[in-house]
Image 1 (cartoon, protein in one colour):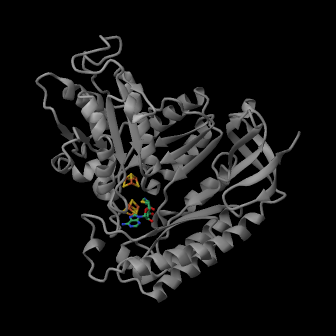
Image 2: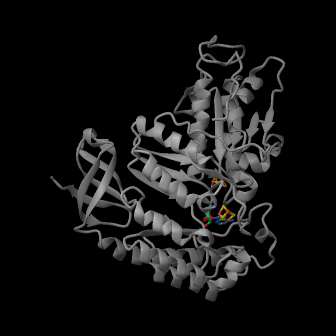
Image 3: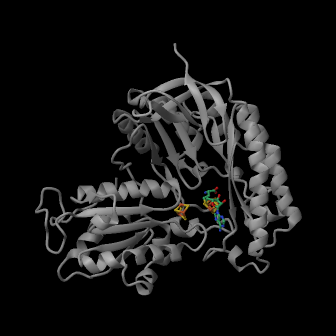
Amino acid sequence: MTQCEIPPSLALNSDPTPTGVRPDRGVFISTYGCQMNVNDSERMMSLMEMANFTPVDRPEDASVIIINACSVREKPVQKVYSEVGLYRKLKKENPFLRIGVAGCVGQQEKENLIKNQPLIDFVFGTDNIDELPLIVARLYEEDGPGKAVEARFKHREPYHVETLVRNPGVSTFVNIMKGCDNFCSFCIVPFTRGREKSRPLQHVLTDVRHLVKRGVREVTLLGQNVNSYRDDDMDFADLLAAVATQTDIQRIRYTTSHPKDFNEKLVETMAKHQNKICEYIHLPFQSGNTDVLARMNRGYSREDYLRKIEMIKKGLPDVVLSTDIIVGFPGETEEQFNDTVSLVEEVAFETMFAFKYSPRPFTKAARFEDQVDEDAKQSRLVRLIEAHETQAFEIVKKYEGQVLEVLVDRAEDATGKVSGRSTQNKNVHFLGSSADIGKLVPVRVMKAFPNVLRGERVMS
Ligand code: SAH
Ligand code: SF4
Ligand code: F3S
């Protein structure tokens, strides 16, 4: 972890009520966005706990509120302002309350947020999370700045972020790389997460070994574009193999992959370590039409994508595929949209995340002239979802009668129900107790729905 110097006034065991800070020192974080944002919120909370703050479940109990916001689609800045507006009354009642905005919206908007909404006291970017305790400490200094903005990318610094997670449970996320250099023409992520940087392979291994000691059974390796992972001459497939063979973790997942970089070596590595690496691949294709893909700057054609899928299915016959799609990209015609529907039908994805194109600041596509109107986008989204749903019901039927290995992560002792994920990332429910948490249990699927499988434990 990047060492963060904690000021004496906030360090553990210091006077718990430094000037100006309410004695309860509660922190409330609301999180939007991808798994990386979820993981970042955990990091923020861990750092605040080290600085003697306490997590609270309600904004009413907080001295510090952080909105960790996502900027990938649909009016994210307005969402932040409306959430901050909800806290106006709390701020009146409690003059010590400090409100901060973080995540991709913090990075994108920086000081504009404070200019446009004075209820906001501080803003920090995606590379400034480890400075959070210092930023908060400065806010509470008697002659301090009153407001704080830290949103500079640390392009030159190595990416050293040991996983900071308070209660990892049986499954947790581990960042392996950050940023994105692909600049898809619709996407804001390269501007909000900066350039690609990878953690040293040995750091990732040490992290996973520590998590195993804390009871973690499954890790999801995270990056905006994991296929770009590099540590000297080691690539992502080498990292996966190392985590599989040099740690005692039982299951490995990863997200997200880019089709242009997804290669045979990765498929071979997954096949070789099937006992640990889950045969689940999230491979966003965005559009089924080659001309649209070119204008999206995705770096592959429809045919290239289908060839990759063929290679994957050949090497991993039981693979489960999921994808992301954008409908209504500027200039997309009905015919081109139909190519997206036909690609969905051809590949048979078990899971699909479909979005209406949303113009984002800084991106090329936002300046394209032929924007698609809202009604057409909505109608395409509905048609795509309908086409997939019909298929999804059929696809999951194959699980009925199969025995899946389920990692139990939740138990309701009152009802005697437990649930967990199979290696295929299916949510499986069956009868059990809290003693099952953290165990890998064989379960025969009795009834399969797209979002949940119901089954019975197989007694050995
Ligand atoms: N790194 C991942 C994507 C992260 S963003 C990848 O390359 O696949 C998650 C998803 O949000 C994208 O796959 C895309 O489908 C969607 N998305 C990104 N920008 C968007 C935009 N401007 N409008 C609509 N959807 C968008
Ligand atoms: Fe965005 Fe494209 Fe990078 Fe994914 S690969 S984060 S869609 S720019
Ligand atoms: Fe959103 Fe940033 Fe993730 S824009 S999807 S929180 S990388």
